[in-house]
Structures are given as C-alpha cells and as structure tokens.
Image (tube, rainbow, N blue to C red; front, side, top):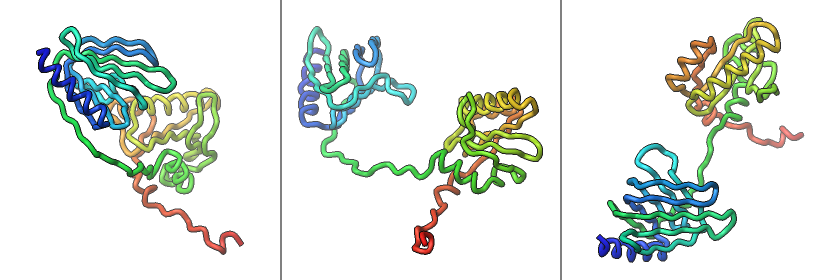
Length: 247
C-alpha cells in the first residue's frame, strides 16, 4: 500500500505543479482551519483541485461542498505513516489551511489545458419579474390593482402590493422554483398586513414552479400559488433609445 501511495504522491505533486485539473476519489479524513475549525473523520470523498489552485471536497451526497478553499493556495503532498497527506494553505488573507489525510486512492484523473472563457449571462431575476408584472398587473390576477412596488414593512419589502376587488393583497415573487422559505415569507407578510390593517388580506406566491411541501403549506394557509412563465421576461425586448425619445 505504501508503495502505491508513493506513486500517487509523485503523480499528484507533478499535476499540482503543472496546474492541471485533478479529480481524486479517495478514502480520507480532513482537518480545516479558517472560516471555522473543523475535523471530518474517515470517509469516501471527491477532491477537486482546479488549475487556479482552488480546492473543493465533496461527499457522495448533496450538492454543497463538505469543505473548500478558494485560490490562491500553496499545496504540497507527502507520504507519512502509511497515508498520503495533501496540505493546502491560502497565500492571501483571510488565512485558511486544510489537511487531507488519504488512506486509499479509489480513482484518479487529471486534465491539462482546459479553458472556459465564457461568462455567465443572467437572463432574468426577481427584479425583472417584478418590473414586468408591475407593467402587466393583470397577469397577477385579472382584477389586481397595483398600489405599490417594493412596499416597505417591518418584515421586509413586499414585491408587489395592491388590491383584488376590495381585498388588500401582498404578492411574493420567485424567479426560480419556490420552496418552503418563500411560502413562509408570503404567509408572514400576509399575517402582518392582517394585523396592521385589521381586516382580511390576501396573499399570492408567484414562481415558475413550487415544491410539493411548499404548495401544501400555502394551500393550508389560504395563500394562492400562481405559476409564472419566466420566458416572458427573457423574450421581452427593451425599447430602443431613439432620437425622438430624447427630444
């Protein structure tokens, strides 16, 4: 086993020096100092070392990293006491240090010369959705009469605030799938308005989709969920700046 780890140590050291992208599936334990102090016991994990020296450690479950350290970092690899030790330390503030103690390498892949120069383009967000619905309040409800955008309350800002018939209504918007936090938020806003106005108040949650538990909650609380096709925003053209507009 030691001889095999010696071979992995040489390869990993060379790949780190060459700034390759390294994907290392290993049985390991982790110690970390920096944003907090943490110790993670032995387990099977995916280590990603990027060409810019960013280090990410994933467990087999979930989408969030178990731990990570952003570039720039200085890394070294050695074999001691029958384990391969990957030691990385951030070279700029804030201070961070991570030690990965590897007992077995399950899979190892490295790549050289990868490039991604395309920047992400955000086609829509909740502000775009809010502005669109402020221009088209009938898409909230055929009878919705808008009174305010970004209405300030002690609990936060209501995206849209108005009336449906004679009932005041608060509208919460999400440009992505709405979950329990969004459902709880619109319910809190609706309940605060009820107390503040001393009358019945309606609540609407609008999003492209909603999780089953959030839908169950809003239905139980008497809040409406309205599906919104976000592509309406993405395909809406902004008016051109013409000479006549400025004269």
